[in-house]
Length: 147
Image (cartoon, rainbow, N blue to C red; front, side, top):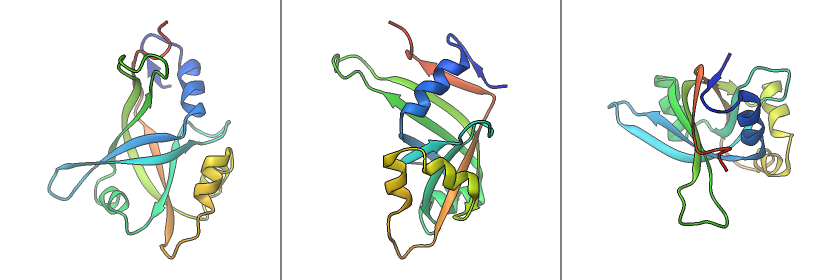
């Protein structure tokens, strides 16, 4: 069971499923952090609550995850009308693994909305893979759901 302080997990999950952009942080071979923006999806129910990213096998995030599966992930929820107010944030640590592009849950996840479908169907010469992120048992939430 995933723990969220302040709001029910179901509420946070619903908000995360509405979004498609997050930031993944990996660790390079020298122990330094590396962060990059990504398009993400969440596995459709009743599958476990895992995040999926599609990327090329030669990208740094994929190589760093192969060497060290510990990651951090963050999704921001900016204020569209009150731009001077800091964005709400959900972030967590987790374990990532590399899956083949043929992974059925990864593909099903990316078929859920137009943006992710476009990302999935992009033509490229790179070998494409999925990164699956299994969140730790605690999601850290800043401001989301506070009115």
